[in-house]
Length: 254
Image 1 (cartoon, one colour):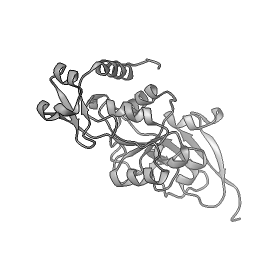
Image 2 (image 1 turned 90 degrees about the horizontal axis):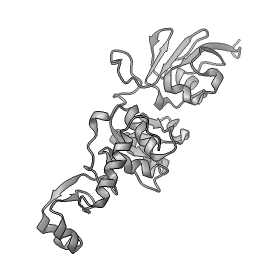
Image 3 (image 1 turned 90 degrees about the vertical axis):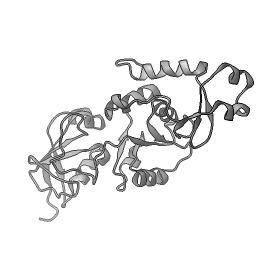
Image 4 (image 1 turned 180 degrees about the vertical axis):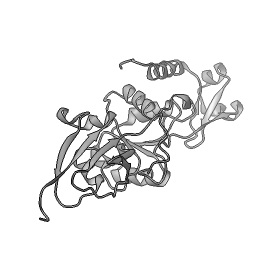
């Protein structure tokens, strides 16, 4: 019968279990279904955004999101691989997931600031809409950072990550660990206000743009290529160095 209930066996691995109730975590479990859903439909029916998934095996064979399931299938779902090279397998996106350009939603302003402080290209606006975030992500191949599952379940989204931590410092540490960015740290190369890149400024050319005492005391100045703000290594510089040290310190809880 067309509407007869059928079932598959599901298993989710590693951090994908964060989205599941306790009784479904790290175990094989049976999932009834009707009709002829795609494997993407099945995964998202369990509360897991497709952007969190990097490999799907059905009966041991790699498939894409459009693969239609059949009764008795054994489905294994994996998040992004940090060490193993799975490039010979079918990928779920036209290009690799790990592109270290980000766009943060309107609720993650401090995270965006910390990522910029560490040197990571991060777009952020405090009133940015979901549609604009998605368009930026597609056009500029940016990874969406959010705590809103709804935006990650949008069918247009190809790159995204759900932030688990609630405190900004821990959120930044989580992103760096998730995308294995430890070797890509370039602190103080981006403007904290607009995300533009810093360039060394000729001291004489910025004399009228900074306080007189600052001009006299400091020798090195930097200008943002986009908003043209002037920066120097004042007392705030040491404070930011301590923040970066905390972000990169394993086991710290802030």
